[in-house]
Image (cartoon, rainbow, N blue to C red):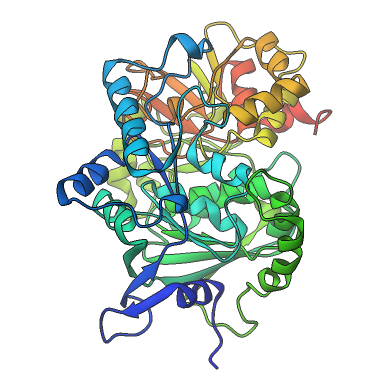
Length: 476
């Protein structure tokens, strides 16, 4: 039998039938999907389509609904769930759950949170599954050895009705990260370094597989960050072979398999790896020791640099990037040659499905203890889920944020995207732990600099983009 990559092994196990005569990347197939997660923003049209066609949901128990995009994250959640439009979306979402028999976590449910934080913490993401959902960052689940990918509204309707999707097989790319990450450098910096290296479309049409010492050393939450942001270099799927860290993470969670079933599954899960002689369509190498804390300067995640560097001159960039860079600098209000550490900020935000898990909050709190948010900076933190928020409060992390001057918000997508009341005003500049810095992503005219949660904390207390390594020697 031919050698195969991890991606191909999982896809082959879920293939129902070929839909054309081709083989390999680009071929069309009907793919079985094990589970899906729904949100109130991308699912309404799918449910309306089911109603109009008189169809039901094929396997309601394989779907879970979570309110996360449009809800308010105001600290007093009971008094505020969002504006009138948000309330209508949330109400229709609840109606769809009742009518189609799908379990929904509404705004006040103690398990509510950002969908890609909630599913793993429930123990519902398991190695070898295929999970498709109406959000591109479904790739997050690759940290568990799971093929996760985003789909459109019509695909959501098809998935709910049939438990299948029409799927195009991807090319494969192996990203080998050699060596160890230096002090103060995180999973977020690693994936930002990859995106800068290969470009915002460098992995288009590919499923990435991450390997190497630096990947194995990361905890599961760091691995989720990398898989989550892999879509920002064009990948649709990101994968890491599951190991004992993954198995330990799953064990004991509320919807994880029983201890007996986990033990029976482990030998199968350990076999979920690319064959030693598997051939990838492309290979990329990164040296972990050469990565520094990263920040973005432009309006695309690949427009970034090491914090101790300066804003580039578009004239010095490759010809095909000069125009985009010039437009980005105009939007961001930056001049070439400006050192990143000289860029003042107005806002600081820690949150999103990329970086709002418990370890992210711990990392930021270590920087904040004994320090205060700089005058003129408004700082916010929105935990990735209500469960993360409670766990953080049990550790006293909320006090570290509040005493430093951060707003301790409720859970939701919040300021990651301008779909709720957490938005930037035109011209405001934000240090953000989110995944996208597109024009208007956090609010019309808002200017976003992506970085790790610890780097956001450093920027908040200095009032400008800052090198976390200068503040963190004693804490890290």
